[in-house]
Length: 162
Image (cartoon, rainbow, N blue to C red; front, side):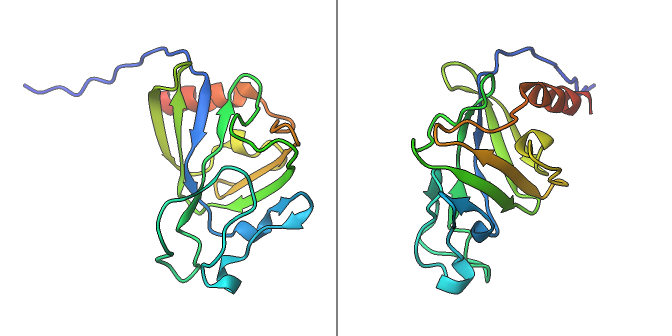
């Protein structure tokens, strides 16, 4: 007889490593200027927002933005993006369209849990993202305004209950 047994493990989570495709980069302001519109540039250029990482040589969709991902490393306790470029502000509004992905990391940055799906509420401290949007203000030190670490705990604990 084969059994599927769900195991719940308590872990010391330190970081959220976001690794998500962004559909429209140009909804976001970086230091008060709108970021790149890949549809206008036909995929040429690069985002100005810190933590943008090129994941493919060129786009593969008509939106022309799938060759870049946004990969901030968020300290769960403080809400600071550890790989943020100091001196840059971000008024972030990203449409993700069910392609959100992140890993929960321990203090040594080992992956202890992975998630893919709708955008969690903790990525929308400013206004409801309805599962499709990342919505946050990031200051020049990389701190996410109104970050609520308890929302991270609630999200992952609720996910384990499913």
